[in-house]
Length: 274
Length: 274
Image (cartoon, rainbow over all chains, first blue to last red; front, side, top):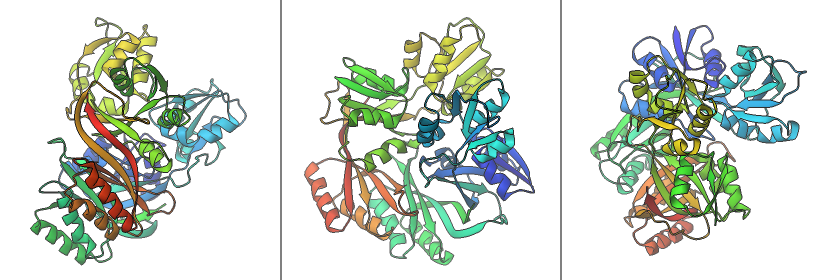
């Protein structure tokens, strides 16, 4: 099977892809829209894209694409803890400059200030890019903050392990596909993600929509408004529901329809944790 | 007066700061937390930070900081349209490589593919950084996708104007301070942003919270759940309310309290549009 993922090699999505689809052919792409398009045009069987980070929030490029395009659904969710490593070519050389994505630099700030107070900091477009740059410039006194996967990919040494400050940092990845894949990971729960388009203005309509779930004791684990991009001030809503009994959700969706609320299923999936 | 903003020079926040506080001393900082800390420790009178982009969504670094720290409030909101320019040292030289932030590259993709199909694309950590790099390397055949402000700051020429594909792209910036500033911009509306912490699980409690606003006909323009970062699966909610009569909102907040729902005001502000 072929599986597209958000690259480059050594990225967190790459780590998720190699762990979940270790026997399959992995195809990287540099941006989310292209990864999804690979799946859409049939070049791959599955596509893996990030959907939410606990610190940075939702990945709107993923959610908006699924909302605006038909027939693409998440069939599995994989939660990956985000742990940052300090990587260099070898453990003995001095480190004068540290490269990484701004978010990773922010996460490792305390460690860097304590251990490398005189190092110059340079921001890059991704953590994997920083690691690759370090690997390609052995003549310079460089280090990168990047995931463990990048150490393997670019043959770098881990100088310091798990330097991130906030431990509660994880990213949700979605596997897009026709059928649920068989993954040898720990199953956690079952969820459905809906996009709701309301017939008139909030809060009235949103209140009605939530009542459909509230009286059925269906638990929401996430709600977020997104601009519709047609008229300023018009929104759709992304809602994550915990599925205990799928039949109850089916009834809820039918009731939404009678209220004039359009619902689109963006995903119906098992949640796995790495 | 002193006003801190998210730099570097030439960023969109810089454009907002120079337009709104043209007679004041502007102090840049490279990350959002530091900009807010400048205000918090009294080094500046106001701080300007991005809070939401219509494509990328909320800036959680800003919202989470305000939620977790006391006594910092938004006293004005400024909406800035995001327009991307193709910048180079002069209009006559060839362009072999184009640099920018991944989001700006995505926005200008169609233009680049039509006009510079053979150019190499290189991602940078910010649009302003790309512009600075182009200015510092006159010996190379480079261009940057960056805001107009960056052309002024780094003395670059505009090769192509407004190359972004989606016109509905704007960013909301918050001015943090003690008192509402006097800005010579167009006033649009008046809003309050609340962070709600619910006593028990959603959807029940969220449904109750929304009912407080729904029956008073208070319009919500945004709702978003955010992890509390204490226990996995516990959330707070960010809600934007349109203020028609402030007294009605005061009553709503009192009713929330009687329901056991904690509300924190993150901002109470006039909305201005550039």
